[in-house]
View 1 (cartoon, rainbow, N blue to C red):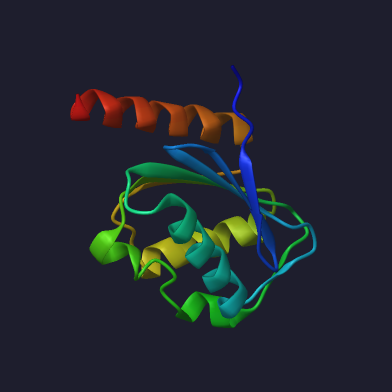
View 2: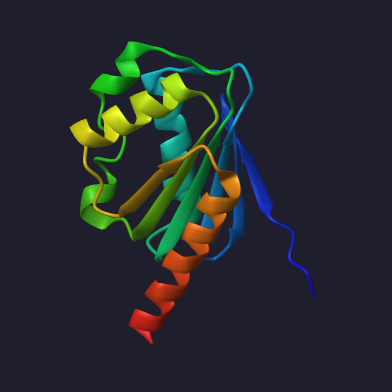
Length: 139
């Protein structure tokens, strides 16, 4: 039996719950990263995944734009007290956004393991490995 992912929309992204331990965040082509729009995505992620252990895979297309107000807000602050995010992989198709993503993570270090790349298959393999390691450690 195949379970279809559940999809949820925000102003700038589609979130796909792929199972109890994985959510994918697919940002829209041509979207503008603004602090309020990114906060909406993060709130929807938390709402859908709750307090169970899970990983996130984020896909950012090459034609997004970035408002600098996004860099000044810790979008993961709510995750620091009650989240069970175990790993985050971010696939960034544009080199400038990849650099800004890495800079953001240096300003706001995450509690979970992170992996930023332009290589989607590598990110998917890394997420799979992180979930397998977490399951082995829990069992």
